[in-house]
Image (cartoon, rainbow, N blue to C red; front, side, top):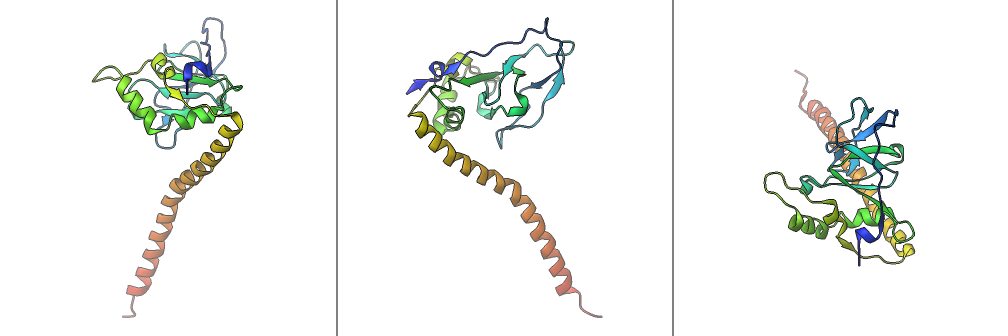
Length: 192
């Protein structure tokens, strides 16, 4: 078991004074807590950057919302958001690739044990929060990289299956509803 602190790398902050770029900003409402994906970002510049828009994220970084942490705002940074910025309301975890796979960390943070740890270590009643340092003190098992990759590939398949079902099920229900309505009309329409 190793602390996240010992298997992750430092994340840089942006210096808005010397940056003229337009960047995508991941705020606390950007993460869909259901499918754990980033769904909405905002284009910002130094002229309109919120004070919390500071952390530079890289592809495959893991972000976890530290304010109201039991809302489970957890996501993996997709490739298209590489070198963009996120709110300081997130703890950004960048894996040390020589020790741990990104998705190994990600899947470990989806576990019930992690949320029990968060619940025990968050502070505040009406506006609970957990510090980045407290998140980084959480320990996860670290098997060899090839074992991590094998487990991650299995979990990826389950994740894809579950998300396909979640997206496909409403369409299937809608089609069955239309089919039902069609047959109801056919069966109840008698010649007069």
